[in-house]
Image (cartoon, rainbow, N blue to C red):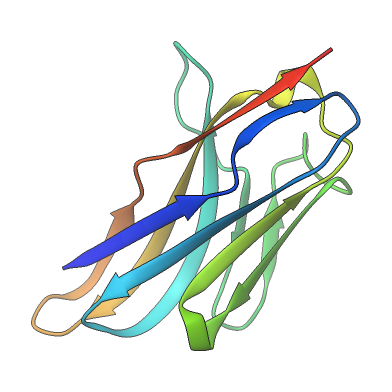
Amino acid sequence: QVQLVESGGGLVQAGGSLRLSCAAFGSISSIEDMGWYPQVLGKQRELGARITSSVSRNYADSVKRRFTISRDNAKNTVYLQMNSLRPEDKAVYFCNVFAWVVGTGYMDYWGKGTLVTVSS
């Protein structure tokens, strides 16, 4: 199986920055897509940013030009650099990977989430 370990969440003032990290561990043969999905309390989890194995990036309109997603394939890790944070960015950010695992094939895996709080 695959375990995703997230880090980097916390409390920051509006206008500040945070960097989220998510490392994937397990019998991984390859990782296709990696992404971050924020979930606000009481609402559905939505796409924040996603990056493919060919380094194509996709962002939610609300985070374009403020957030940058990147990946380190050697470390099976995805990052989210969050700049110019706003109070409305407050959410639990879940890491997601679409990976080929030995004996399982391609599957979606989710982390437990890391809380980002932005004070005004």
